[in-house]
Each structure stands twice: as structure tokens, then as C-alpha cells.
Length: 174
Image: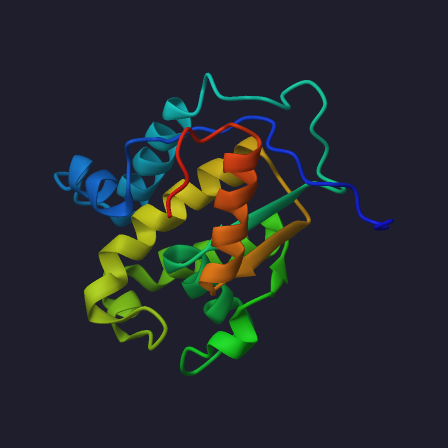
């Protein structure tokens, strides 16, 4: 017998907004902070009907697993890494408050500062803000003291396997 309850997929959603699509949607907004706020609001609007735990979700004991891209960059920034290190990022746990602190720092840096940040860089500085807008929208809907960072395909594969076993995905991704 395992001391941990079995994981169960309660509900899921696929929002047709990735970081590039969301960035492009608001590319005409010049002000960095205003563009960020609009992106986050717009993404949250796309989640409006998706609230499987709206009446009972509490911050304590609720966990989100975040993989790749924005989440791993935010984790590296949270740790203050000079260079990205997968061994330090993979498995890290962060709270909503810690993530918000990093995102606020990104906003304070502005586009030029983000370009110079070794964890973000020239190519990702615009994408990190649309990714952060998505992440912050998710954390407004579901605040947590435990966002676990996964930078290895194994956990993502396990999640897909669980979703397939629960009948959530019609066909497995493999």
C-alpha cells in the first residue's frame, strides 16, 4: 500500500494560446507592463469556463506540475542561477508568491534588461513575458504553495499515461 493517494485526472483543457500566439495578439501595445497585463487577462478569460475546483480548491495541499520553457526559466531566476542548470531546476518546488516575485522582477527589468539576463536572453525576452502572463493567470485561478518544476520528459510522459488511463485522452501520444 502506498502512503500517497492515487492521482486522478479530474478535468483538463487545451487553450489554443501558446507563448508566441499570445505575444503576437498584443504586439501593437507598446507599454511592456500594459502588454503583460492584457496578455494575462486575455489568457484568464480563455480559462473562465474551466473551473473543476472552483468551490473547493484551497491553496494548501494543491499541487501544479509545470514543465519546460517559462516554468524552468522562472525557476532558474528564482534560484539566482548565473547559467541554466537542469539538475538544480528539475524537481524544484515554488509557491505562487515566489513565482510572482520573479515575474515582477522581469517587469522591472523591462525588455532591455531581460535581453541581458543570462537566464532569458535575446531570443526569449519577449516570449518569457507571454509565458509569465499565462503562468500568472493560472496561479490566479489556482494559487498553490507547491508548483513542482519538471525539466525531464519522464514526468510529462507519466502525466500523459495517467490521462490516457483515465480515458481523458482518446489516444496516447506514443
